[in-house]
Image (cartoon, rainbow, N blue to C red; front, side, top):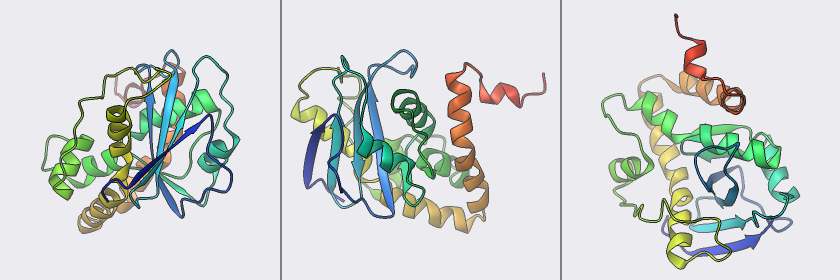
Length: 208
């Protein structure tokens, strides 16, 4: 779904905002360490071309009750790409573990074993014939004012996740791997907690 409108909110979502049965979510931070690096922006979309963004003042404590309520709502599926990082970040900074979870990166790795790359850009190109511009990926998300280019980039990270989920679900069903993928999704909250406590999930299951 092409971008229609970006709604930028400061500190929290407005009350009463309804994303339906599933919401695509992404985060922008000051780095790749959830314990060290501040959460700057949360992007959300119902897959309808509208993107809601919550911009945080990183000098202030996090307090976003409407966003926190959505993240913990068991009736709303949260769709991420590389959920492991976003879930750990949201849990650490907002104190809420998102659930239930769907991760397009994990789904792709399980359903598309015939390809070597599973980035969001690769998935959009391969499955939706959409090219994403990742030029703003390393920009300063902690800036008090975000540029139009930053906002457009951030929106693109959630606009297509619903369509990707539909395409990946078809591939998972074709290969009879839906249950396997769901087991991985269900493990993600535990995986995020392991990451935050300094454990490497893969090492826990290793032979040595």
